[in-house]
Image: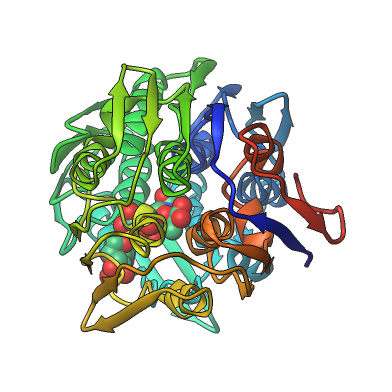
Length: 424
Ligand code: EPZ
């Protein structure tokens, strides 16, 4: 597994370049299953999750290559395997989103039911109910979900919650069904969904409304090759901005799309961070103690749940008490006990974290529990006085490209102790 050794405190300073979005790349790679011709996807970050999605397409017998940030997918029509094995879905729940496109293109498909994970129960009932509305017969047994396209249905799908994955899964599946006309209501509005819409349009699909809560799709893919460059990773960008501010540093975060992070800028300005925001870069400087704030985590354009552990870490040393209400994954607080081991003062009551500012954090051995929690602990280690060890860092290699090099360039030296099987 391996772990990181970090000596704090350090004021992160300098320039960092943001990579392409993991959460835009994954649904677009899955959507390449519905293409009839070659798909080239650019600006794809080299991450464990991306490699898992590529493994899935290869397990289906598609021809996939990935080098220098470019994923090239050549569809297969003869010996397609439409059963996706559990060991791949277990590694990454986004794998489940190949079910609909595969079943739409090849008539039926079977994918393992994703399990839970450390940020909470991760059901897929919205996905399954949506596929049934589209005209699939869905059966669940022995931990697998099988979908068969029986009779395509036009109509409206109303999502009980604005689920990112369900929105992307149902958009892509409807896009693959020639002639179907579908509206998705209460759709998620994340920038990654807008990027998926742009990709599907390049495939010739008639689709509009991504970025709003109502997406209209007229299914049907044209026969043509497609090239698409994915958007910058707004969560990676937000993580580095928070890291520079949390360590009282100064720096420039480049290659981001600043419009994707308006909810973060609002919170950081209340905290007292000095920000100069351009379209594709942000200057960050933090002097003195952060001011306490209230943060309301909610679906886009609200404050992103994927930056909740990171902003909490910054607020552990604020000059008062902050409140963070987690409205997306109510139990996404496994990083709290680890931060308390480093001296933070945090209590959780029914989905709200109450963070009383302390003078400073102290280095300690801590455990990463999920991708963003582990990133938060790395920020805490740079803030803390003394030595820290962050265990289970395989989580961080799932979502942060060249994380050791990027933090190293900011003065945040990370010693990685472990099997070099992971991407550094
Ligand atoms: C996506 O997960 C992201 N993953 C997550 O990022 C992110 O935290 C999440 O959206 C919320 O923004 C990818 O894009 C690959 P949801 P997803 O469906 O799609 C409930 C990261 O760190 N729900 O929007 O799985 C669910 O329990 C990851 O990069 C159902 O009840 O999230 C949650 O409460 C972590 N039934 C809410 O909806 C369903 O069928 C939102 O989840 C589906 C979801």
